[in-house]
Structure formats: structure tokens, C-alpha cells
Image (cartoon, rainbow, N blue to C red; front, side):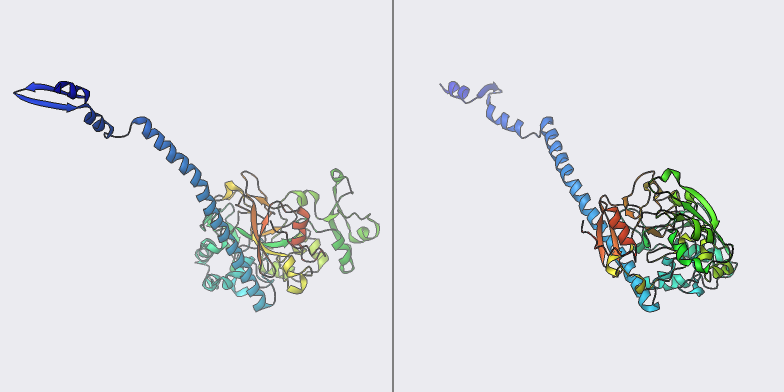
Length: 425
């Protein structure tokens, strides 16, 4: 009876050396259950953890990108405040400089005599006065070193963390002009992710601007312009005629523009650089017709934003209202140009003069950065859906890439009568 009870309880007995040993089946099962996870259970746990990470990672990335976008917008705000501080101190907004081959010259101040671009001019208002002065009276023996320091010094306020850090990037063209017009050799330089508003169009000014200045034309002056028959863009052709023939005999079309047709339509800002300080100073004294007779048809001098070549824009020029006109904002950069000089709108030092590297225009729709596509005249950003713009009153607004192109163009023009309020994305 006793053995039956043991058997029913799952126990067994056997004699060994006069002793009785019992092993419990129940105890054996418990021991086995505590030995660890099975392979199937482990795989299930790993799968669950992978799913949870997959669900949380996009949220973390979105949170980080939101933080980076806020940082970008804050940088735009700081630049706008510096530009307004400049205007308050000197009664005009920063000038755009002379051209992309010119660097800043400290002793030439902040006006139309300054060959360097608006970012160089703005350095004292970004708490960078020593950097602005670093090239003052640089001797011939150390001029390259002085300008290399100026061009390659990182300034985080001029770079968006969604795109890149503020580091020096190799240059495609290495020859520039600096103090006293001396040739300067640079191998690398920092870039900017932000651009001042040059206006509604970089290329080319409407022919109507010639007619308003024709009375000042020198005798026998000839001007090149693009004849664009309405509704027939394929029939556009470049003409060079005496100004009086244009005024008296040319059938005017609203689409006619100053400059060569091919140059106007190639998508890169037209710019002719003065070769010496003396030549640049002479350009500052030219009248409108003389500027139009240059190879770039004066395109950089007849723009309607806040900053252009040799500009001296004051608040009274912003007839559409400061709150309705772009001042500065994020620019488009080709993705594969973030660390290489392969985008024409991101190939020059950020302290260089007038070009699409530091200015952008509203004539083209804004765009998110893309691979293999250069848009050296467009605003944009490294963000997927928005870009930050500061207006003339210093207010910063996040703009949608879905903005109507006509509205975007109107917000870029300082006096087109549009007065369009910026939409909220």
C-alpha cells in the first residue's frame, strides 16, 4: 500500500547500500522549468524589443529635427537682428559687396565702397569685431594667412545643424582679391546656410528700366537686351541696339529684359567683377545707363530686395512695408555639395562679395535640398517641408515649400505694390 502511495505521488524508491532514495517527479519538472528561456522565447523577446525600438526611433529623430529647425530659425533671427542693428547704427542695410572674387577690406567700412559681402560687413554686429579687423593693413608677407583666418573661421550662427557644422570646405577657385586689391590665395573656407534677400529676380532687369533712364544716355550708347515676343518664348533672341532706336522704334513687350537671353536664362546670377579697387570705385559713380552697358547689363545693380551689388537700401525704399518683405532666410544647397565645392550657389567663402552664395531671389520657388540639382538663386533648406525667413521688421516665420510662387515672389520685392501678407504653413 505504501509503494502504491509513492507511485501515485510520482515517487520511486530503490535500495542502495541499505538506504532508500526517493526522487520526486514533481520536483524534477520544477527544476527543469527554472533552467532558463527556450530559444523560441528568446526570439520572441528580441522581436518585441526590435518592434519597440522601431516605433520609438522615428519619434526620437523627429524630436531631434524639431530641435534643429528651431536652432536654424534662431540663427535667422540673430542675423536679422544684426542687420537691423546695422541699419540703426549706419542708417542703411548692409551692402552686397562688389562680386564673388572680392573679400572684405576693413578700412573701407560698411557702405558701397566695401568690396566684401554683407556677411563680412555684419561681423561687428555679430560680436565678431576682432575678426572683421583681422585683415586690416595686412602686409604683403602675411596677407594670405590673414585672409585664410578670416575665410575659414567657423561661425555657428551662419550654419544650420540640419545640414552641416560650421567647418572649412575646399574651394574650387582659389584666387581672390583683398586689401589694396592684392591677390589672395585661399584653399578652403567656411560657407553659409543663409542668404540675404536680393529681390524678385537676379536675371535680368526688365527693359522698362532702361526707358526710365534713357534721358541720361551718352550719345551713341548701345545696349544688349533679350527680345521676348509674348506667348512665344521659343522665339526669344538677343539684340544690341542704340538706346535711341530702342526708345523710338522697338515694339515693347512686358517680357523683354536687359542682358543676353542665354545668360539670363541659365539659372546662375550674372556678375561682372571689378578687377581693381580703382575700377570698382569708378563703377560706384556710374549712372544707370552706364551700368546697363556692362557685360552683365547692370543686373546686380537693379534688384529690388534688401541687398545687391553696391547697394545702399534704407527703410524708405521698402514701400511694400518691412513686415511684408523678406530680409534674410535659409538657402537651397545641393545635398552632394554639403562638403564639396560643386554647387555654384555654395562654392565661395561666406565673406566674399555679391553672388548667389550669400544672396537669393524670389523669382524661383523655394525648394528642399536635393541630390544632383543646383539651384543657386533659390531659397530653401535642409528640412523636408519648411524653411525659415526673417522679414524686414525682424520677425521670423516658418514658411511652407507649398507657398504660392507668386506670393513668394511678391514677398521678395520691396516695392512692387503687392503688400502680400505671408501665409502661415
